[in-house]
Image (cartoon, rainbow, N blue to C red; front, side):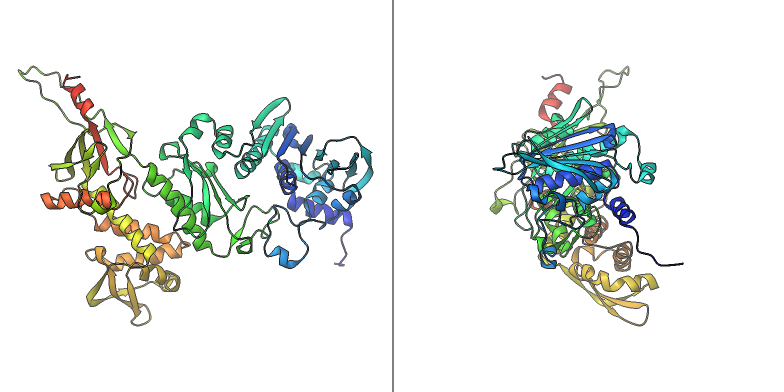
Length: 570
């Protein structure tokens, strides 16, 4: 086989196929160029899913007439000058490949006018070759029209779906651009229909309303960052009842760039621990600002994937910010239908049967107690402190509040208390440790031994210290104080298996949930009055959401008005 240099047209077609996967890729690249040009308004029009035509118009700074031909040269860009610039990219585009790749795959016409110019300049290209250029009337800004996409590389058409599916992909691109830039007015039209129109007023909730509808947008919770986070985070996230069976509602942004990043995705999901059932995912638009020098956006041709230098800090910043927003909005569940109607029996005095609630709905959070009184105060209901009355089936703590009756699931409540106490200890790096009177030998599999170096920081931050004792045997010297009654060998194995499965900054959350679950009081376990008071006090003192790490409510409320209604007093 003879080695040959590819003809320019073939090389351009290959490069175009890497950057331009489908019509939505064209829209993304052109809109990014518009935003880099400082546009305050971007309008997109498409026909036949973008295959027939795509037009992207903006009111940005425009391109000088004498640079038009150069703009379509491969690796020609105004956004990058040296490798040092590449190490701290602040623009959405930087490679100088977008216009060249688009022109290699379609018929392109670009019309542009810079501020102060007497007329607009245009250029037309086919298959990357300039056909004509000149001047004509035009508004300030740039308009790019792309027609007959992939006519020069028809093999790409085999991977294109229906026009409606491609239009939906384009809509998704515009939706995410609008979330990242709420101060820019975006419009999208397909044939004669307007699919998206935002105001550009800078209000993210208004963008979310345009994307998801006013009802969903009205229920979203604002994320304003965390004082404990390394990086600034903001955005909006949905309550648990707005969850979805897939991740399509999760949108992540780094420095205004819509990205795909496992660390950030898992951070958002872990923030919902205890609030969402397994297999459910939230609606979320989370934006994080990271110094450009700590972000590598040059890892994929379409720039969707990014690498983060300090992914652990990014994970913690996002997880904390979202978690704190959710905790502030976390409700006490209200039980409706708890009181079943009297059974129809022929008895002088009918009895009332009790059943578990078939419906749970949200009720307002109680006002937080003063910080100085938290440690000694009983649990707060929405109408004041609760008075502990006793237990039902040695499982549910019964309490009275000014606004009704409260039922506390003792296992779920204790589990939640322990879980968030563990997370606080993790963050502070000060675990409560129980030294072993006698070291406990633990036999590890070869796979677990291999995972041990990466898992040891997690183990040590939870108070588990190990030392080697032979090839596959290790000695457990200490365990978390609250986990002193559970199997240390099982705990170590769980951590190691989690790291074998990929590990990452989020692994410790699953470990905390496991420790808390095994350490909490069990259902069916009798509690004394002081133990019930201590549990209720801790439930408030930990400032936790009203759900355990597995999603079950810790407490239900039956309002006084519901009781009065059932007894015919209202």
